Amino acid sequence: MAPVCPQEHWPGAVEPLLEALSPRRVWTPGDDELSSLVRRHSKNLGYDLADSADELTDAVVVSGDANYHLVAACLAAAVASGPPPVGGNLGPPVIVVSATGWPHADRDGYRDPDRIPAADRRAYARCLPDPDEAWLSAEAADLAYALEPGGAANGVRGAVDALLATVGWRARFLEGFGGLAVLAPDVRLTPGGALAEVWDGLGEGAAAQALLRRLDLELGRASLDRAHLERTLAERTNRAGELRASMAAALDELDARLLAETEAVRSVSEALARIGTKLLAGTRREERLEHRLAATEALAAAARTELMEDRRWMADQARLVAGSQAWRVGHRLARTAWMLTFRRQRGTDALERIIVRMERGLEPGGHSDGLPG
Image 1 (spheres, helix red, strand yellow):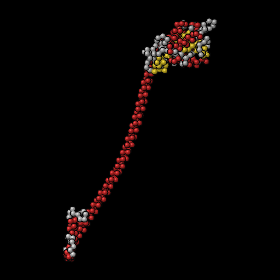
Image 2 (cartoon, helix red, strand yellow):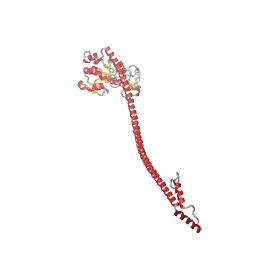
Image 3 (cartoon, rainbow, N blue to C red):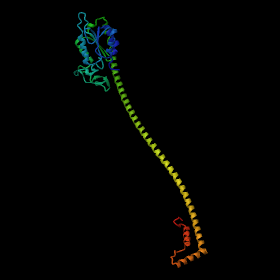
Image 4 (spheres, rainbow, N blue to C red):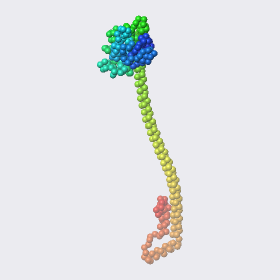
């Protein structure tokens, strides 16, 4: 709840005053909830709305900008508008001023600080006032508040007291919801009149007023606690959002890495599958080569056996020929013919060379004509 809620005084104070006063015109220069109520009920309460205070203005409601400069200016204009109460004139208007209690009684508040001349504007900050401290709190506020309370020309109550010191009017101060002051010249308070009856009922009960002031202070503390909790919650929400963003980024990075590693594993698996296929093909080829080698060795062994048999047969045949009578006779005749013709002999006879060559090939590790033994 806001520290100042002047609209809460409408049903118990402001509306009864306007009904009893039956004003011709009402001037309300502010722009807040209480000013809106005054404008909204103008028709059913039978008064016109004035853009400024004039001789027909019977009531002025000052609410919405709780600082000494603007309140003092409105009070001065209101007092100056009323003619002297002679010749049937009613005199100055009845004035209602909001925010005369805590926190604006002795501390300026600015809805728009730039509207206040720099010379009349106190140092301010948009932070909530603290009922237990002179300085403003650290909690943010929509309204700008003077940094410190007290001092000259600071706060709404100071402007009201300055006016009362010059005009000597009667005043009623109500506590609660930021406070409310009702100012009236004696001429308006005719004994036995409707306004006098309402006036007498304003501000009754000192204990109740004290309780309302304490309630304002407690509401101020509650507002501070709420603002602190909201700020803490906002900070934690922001941190949670940052953490969620960080976690999302980390998860995205992990997903990207997982995708890359999955792709790498897939590539390695495909490469291993290709290597396995090649190894299987190589193994099968090696098996085929081993089978072919074994077959070739078997053929070579068979060929070697056959060759050995052929050599043995040829050696046997050569021995048979060499041992025959015809071969010996023919050989001697051939030698005789070589001698008669003086031709050069070729050495050992051919059959003997064949026998030696074949028998050498039959020995273990022996070779003949370049063939393996």
